[in-house]
Amino acid sequence: AIHGTRIEILEAQAEAAGLPLTVVELPWPCSNDEYVEAVRPHLRTARDAGVDAMAFGDLFLADVRAYREELLEGSGIEPVFPLWERDTTELASAIVASGVEAFVVSLDPERVERALAGARYDRAFLDALPEGVDPCGENGEFHTVVAAGPMLAERIALRSGEAVERDGFVYADFTLDGPTGRRR
Image 1 (cartoon, helix red, strand yellow):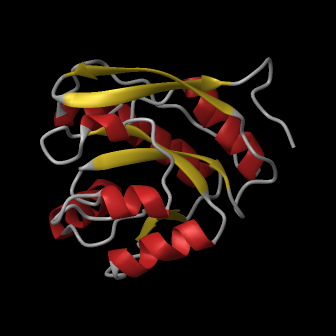
Image 2 (cartoon, one colour; image 1 turned 180 degrees about the vertical axis):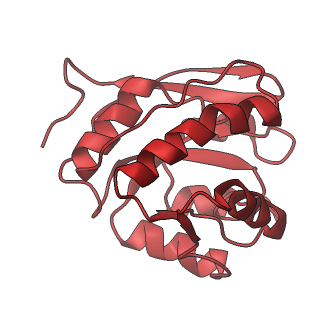
C-alpha cells in the first residue's frame, strides 16, 4: 500500500516474471494485527502448495528483518535475505547498470524533493538525492515500480500520471500504457 502501485501493474509484473501472484486484501488503515491475520492464511496456502522459502529485499533494517522472521516462524517457510548488508551505493549502481527500468512511485517529501515523484530510477535520480538519503530507499525515503529488467520476459509499458500528496507521502500515479500495458 505504501507504494501506491495499481494492482494491474503488479499483475503485469508477475506475468512478465513468470511467477504466480497471490493478492492479500488489506483494510485501510491496517493495524499490524489485521495485517498478520490477513497474511497468515496465505502463508499456510503457500506452504501447502510447496513453497518452502520466501525472499525479502531488505538490506540493513534489523527490526524489519526480525519482524519478517517472526511472521514466518512456525509456518514451514524459511525467510531468505539475499541482499542483506549489501552496500546500497554499490547495489543502486548495479541495479541501474543491469538494465532495470524503474520509476519512483512514492516518496517522503521531508527527505526527497517532491519533483522527483515519477522520476526514472537512474544515475540522474541517484545524483539528485540529498545527502543522507539511502540510494535504495531503505529507510522509506522513496519506493519504485519496475517496468523492465533481466528478471522480466518483456517490458511493461507504463504511463505516468498526476502526482498527489496524501498521508504525508507524494504518490506518482502510474497506469498501464495501452490495452495490455505491455509492448516488446
